[in-house]
Length: 434
Image (cartoon, rainbow, N blue to C red; front, top):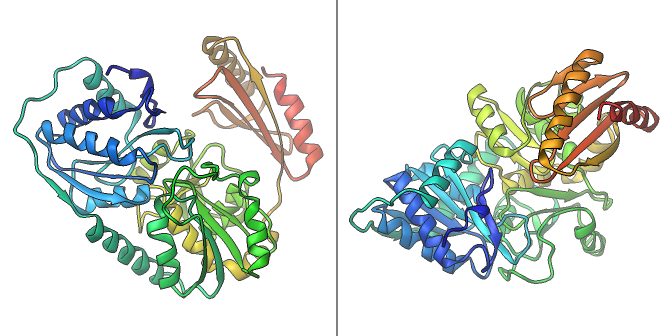
């Protein structure tokens, strides 16, 4: 089944079974196997169609001569860590992450644990669509789900205890019935927390919105209050994102979580996506290296500069001591360790106000033409912070980001400042660049 439209910059994803199905999965396995020519680790999330897609993927990999280790169900960072542990050529996670339950797909990770680059994804796509697959003897298969789950849990506990005390808190944990369900509640209990489990039942496709946003998780505030708990923490279905409410039921946004995690681990050399708030540098005093938006760019740069922490304000955070891939589970443990004082920590962070607007264009060509003009004009009139991905610059007492969407003919502008009035004013002035 030729369907190259499911190949995105960061992953392979589509609606099941119209776009992603077992035929495509087997062919993809043969393409990945042709590329890898060695051991491949595979795993998946809890979606109903994941086992059959994974089975087809493994069939394709083995038919291309690859040996396969199956580590079963878990968060994506578990599969990424397993790739390094078993010295695999690469690892593959069957998941659609935070996208709808009717969708599925595949994430690829290097031995190091970071996600595949755009360039290598393009190579896989070319093999899938154009080139003959390798003709080889059938590869072997081993299931090490139980074995590696315990290795992952032990690794997380050891890494946590090397830096933090046990978790003295009552914790509401919501795993969206996803991959974190098999590890996060157990980790919290092992580290001393009093745990109340919500949506950790390993039952996918129920009425839980996969994307963890404040509106879709408001039901947890009632659970928090009824249980007199100290914190709500949770993940999306493949657990590469984390979210939290504090003890008062207040949503903690991604930039605040970024700062809390950085300060808790004492990070000094942080890699962050360009859309990260100035809050991070103000709150931590750390050296901040900015990259293009997208976790593959953040992790690649973090590895290059040997960063001690990295992330994006969309809920992606990675801890190199534990994993070079985003770990919603490990981030959740650190937030839980701060549970009883988290409200005070957040209240003491620097405050920024934001204003935003988006401009729609008829096509991508017009969008990129407008972006190039904005980059040039901003450089003439303002102090540019970065032009890696659109343009980020200082405007009066505000910081503005003008960035083109990677998936639609849209440009978004976001301004942040110490007051709402200054943010609004900066947004109005910056809009004149488009």
